[in-house]
Length: 178
Image (cartoon, rainbow, N blue to C red; front, top):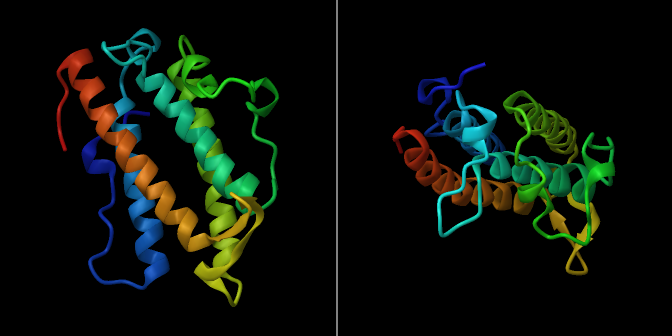
């Protein structure tokens, strides 16, 4: 599938907190898809000095981040991510370096797999009386974190990396926008 800027749904201007946070996260996810769409494996693996980050690495990194925060930390691991057995826990750059040369279809599949599980985790947590205040099963720095915190962190993570993706994409083929 080819993603375009117009495929993104802008977050609502006036909605409840949960709807707003989920909509902003979805918007940022779709922005990454748009920035990485329509490129070959070679283009997705292109570095632009001085950084070694690639669009392929960003796709895989954000799939890992999604699964790490919502599936594994927040929900306690309700589904084993397909890439988890290949992960090198000793390599902090594993998601970036192992993505080079992967097919666009595989990279998008990993992201979509993580997003689907994340969406399930969020929907189930929002059904609880605690809603956004629901706490994680796992801990971060010795503390359980709220769903609200995780969603805000993911929005921040995507937004920061979407800035990187925008610069990388422009250097690769001149595509610009937001």
